[in-house]
Image 1 (cartoon, rainbow, N blue to C red):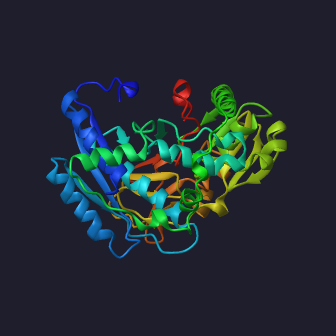
Image 2: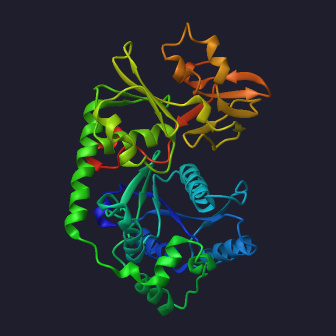
Image 3: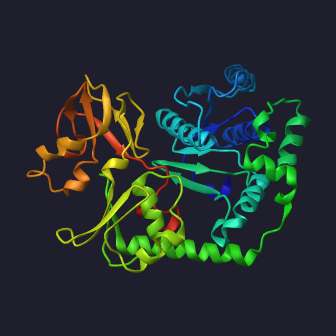
Length: 387
């Protein structure tokens, strides 16, 4: 924890706990640290409702933590129907729930239990994608207004289990960890996760990551309305990929091969749900969400996430829907300074079928919406404002 500080007096920390050995050990170790540094700690357990025993295990974990003197809450995810990309959708929903819970708790820090074996396994899974996958998991990263800390990255899984065993503290084994349907489980069973990584390739990636952050800071303006301006006619492929991921609210950057030619000479294009086009009025290339790619409206409740990019922090009275302004943009084109392609994708609040508010235009009753894509443009500490 020392390398993440200073934290200030009486810091507030949120800890994600699944009930497994890794996160249970993290919660207990964080409790020891919190007592020493007068921190306020709360654990959050996400119940995905994906297995028959999930809710019972979540409550069992909560009771176990309370018995150890750690305050804990359960966060229930109710909108995860089975289907393709279930793990990815569950991960997105989990981090959104944790982010909102930490925010309500007043904690700017969320601790998660990734450890040394997770790091090795991830690098092994990414190795087939070339050197840009070999950086592994970062010790800290940013999500919206939250900093995620991973203090156990240098600690092996076996050490964490020995720590709990020595104190007679049990944990829950998730059967999906051994399910060959999942890539990580297959990797563990194959034994390939112990393959050493070439340090030179990791250094190469880190150098490129620093260059990406510099390119974004020097050439890009990122707007709270969910669009970006590139003040040049080209941008490094990694930087352009990071920017497209932000504007599209995606989990992953587009493949480098898909954007290499575009990055060398920017021109009108649509890629990964993002429109790119020159804007002479704004003096650069505009990146905006593709209207047809926007997600359908969601219920207008506090903490709602729409299009993986906007969070409804404070809904207005009477609002029932939270989604894109869409065709309603035509009523604001003469009065708003934003391009029409941006106007159509602005978040709006609806009462039934009637437009109620467009927060970014100052239209309608008071409410608060924040641009909060899954990942910032860069998590490089030296360029944090870029995100």
